[in-house]
Image (cartoon, rainbow, N blue to C red; front, side, top):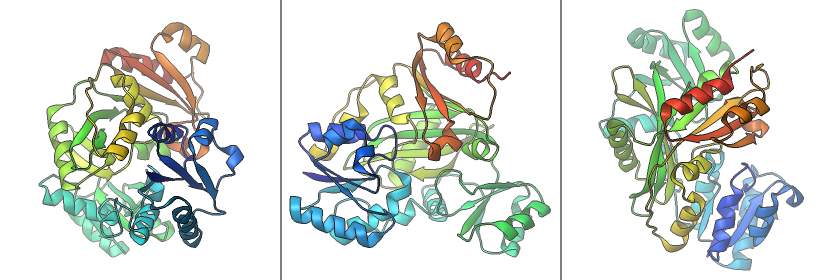
Length: 386
């Protein structure tokens, strides 16, 4: 089996997927624009070959690379990056080389927020009122129905980049005079707690496993206001969140993919869809999967790709939490104080690459406890400021 892994060193933990694939006997073919000597040593040992291009955004170079790798190793069975940024590129390559997986005919259902909204509505899920806005008059007409505040975000976007909360006419006109050129969707602001429904689906669309997470604050606020945050997994998924997550999984026909669905939990207890992401949750969340259930999601994913199915017996034994810290914030408790007080529940202290630090902080702590209240208490202790 030949699997191309696009940009395999983009995150601190993606090399683990490649390592597990190699252990299953797969030819893991890396394709990236970073120098080979910069790759993680475990990644190097897992790759059958690494094909370097000058720029991953140059599609002609990617076509040439796939042509070479196909000639040398035979038919390419899968191509993936497990990264939101490259989903469209992967879909185009799958289409042009007839590789199984998401192709150009369906990619925009999971990239364009305006199309996601239509699929949610078709599945009978509640959505925030909103629409694409191409002009100031479009926005004013929408706000006449919804009122302020509203949120404006790129119809195709990654994370909370270039996302704005708009409170009044002055901010609205300023947004249109300075906004990036891409197409924007505008929605009524939903006041609620962000929760996620995360997991891995097999080739038939049946979830192999799933879990959920709750966030201390939204990614938009974290990025735009340079704040820290934490998020944690549930041991028991709220029944309505579970039902809504499984309904979303079916509506988007997720197959042989990770999924990360985001929702607002309103004060009235309803879950309003925010967006779908057909890839693993970001940061160190896949490691959190493992810590919370004492299994190996990297091995499970590799088994699914190689054999087409995998059976997983698991329990959510722990709450696992990621606590970010940012360099611009002066914290009360130093690392050695945290470890002395709570070292028995701190799994790791991790650094975050610069491109992800606006959302995930410059560093983070991974914790696990059996009791949610204890975990939140420790997270807030780590966040205490001078």
